[in-house]
Amino acid sequence: MIDLLSNLQTGLVLWPALLICLVVTACFLSLRLPAKLNPGALKTIGLFLLVINAGSIRKAEAQSKTDSLLVLSQAALSNSWSLSANPIFLRGTAVPAFAQLGASAQLTSGGFKRPQDFKRQLNFGFGATGLSKVKDWLFFGSFAYGKNYRDSIRYANVANPYQGNPFVTGDGVGGNWRGDGLDASLQLIMPKTGRWQAGLKLDYSTQQNARDNDPKPLNRLLSYAVQPSVAYKFSPNHTLSILAGYSFMDEAVETGYYSDQNPIIYSIRGYGEFTAGPVVTAQRFTKGQGYQLGADYLYKNKVELLFGARFGRQTQDVSDGIAKPIFVGSFDEHKGEVFALFTSGPEKQGFAASAKAWFRNGTGFDPIFNAINPAFYFSGLDAKVSYWKKRDRDLLIFAFYPALSYTNYYEGIAKTNWTSVMLNQDAGFSIIKPFSKKTTFSGELKLGYHFNLQKDIVVNRPTQLSPVLVAPHYRFASADYLKGAADVGLTFQASSLSYQLKMGIDRIQATDLGSRNNANLSLNLIF
Image 1 (spheres, rainbow, N blue to C red):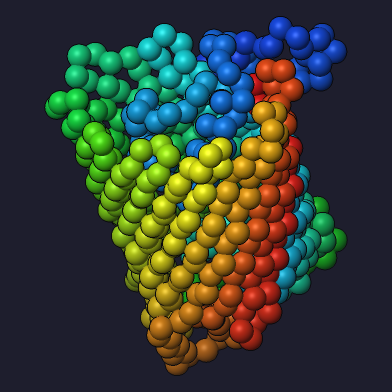
Image 2 (cartoon, rainbow, N blue to C red):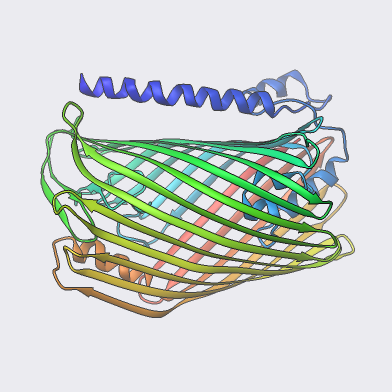
């Protein structure tokens, strides 16, 4: 009965939010279908158009639209909208009105991983993305559904054991998981009112995952975020924007309700510290909310110059049980970032440089010890320098991605403290080359070497989990490794439709800890 009530309660929370998100996306992202699309084809894509459909794409040269989207999709090229995630700057970005429907598959495998990560994952999914312009209104939205199969996960019965919260449950038996996930996002930019401009960003995500073997844990995660923003244009070249954000998450983990055996369940309380015991049935709930404030300044003339800052906080409370909830612990995290972007050059040749400095500082309060016990501190500096040149009909892009990161985990009860400083150096080359008026090739090669500058670990009071979770995580985070990736794509034009096929592979080879491989395939239809 408790499980039934829990499922009903979860459904009452999830489905209204899901329906609202889908209705909003369907209403705002409308696309006028090509006149030559027959009724049979309409029925075939009708399911997708329930999420993102019809209206107001102005008739333009389809190939030109596809080429513009190819350029915007290049990771080596930054713009104010993509770097800041501020919907206000969408209006100044050369994104044509479009709708894209697609399906994808991805396979990830290998032993170079954190100890609570999967060893192998197969994911299938479909989704839609689109931009619609209705008079002076802009609507950009996306929707994605994924089905995943993950193998060999141990000591993690939550959806994401590395999101920061140290209070997670798991068992040493481990097993294979199956899950479903749905993500939706909407950005809208309102018409200008004098020098003022307003925008809104909505994000929604939900997932459910279950393990096949005893004690057959199951988790459900719901999260959403709202980010309004406003901008004031001091002159044609100077814009100042202020934004705020609110986020919410709710996760429920059920263990033992459908099992025949009851192995030992670990209630992990930090980086080595835990309580454990056999559990017949158990439920754990994590609820959290977050706040964010930010500001952006944009100068745009012959060059583009952007400065931005974000600072936020999130808190999460963890409890066990329904009738008489038992407080397990709380998590408190502060985070922030400052970033800058410089872009110069006409369309045929140009240069861009961006940099971002960031930090995350998280602590966990443990009621058993009535003290702040586990803590972490992450910080880093990420940069990107790119140069592009258009030669005849070809676009060539060269990019360099240096990054420096600092990681520290500390726990007072288990007397554990470890640190790692990493320097990453990646370089890439991309090309967009039309083979004909109706066929375009795109490709990217990327190679990098990530190496450790400093590492240190101290475990003065080791526990049963110290060699299982703490030491392997430290070895992973401080390992030297070589990284390579290759992506290719072909875009075919057919009347006012474009078909895009993409394939990609990447491999990480660590010095002593094995490798990690990823392969992906996608097919998209662009209107």
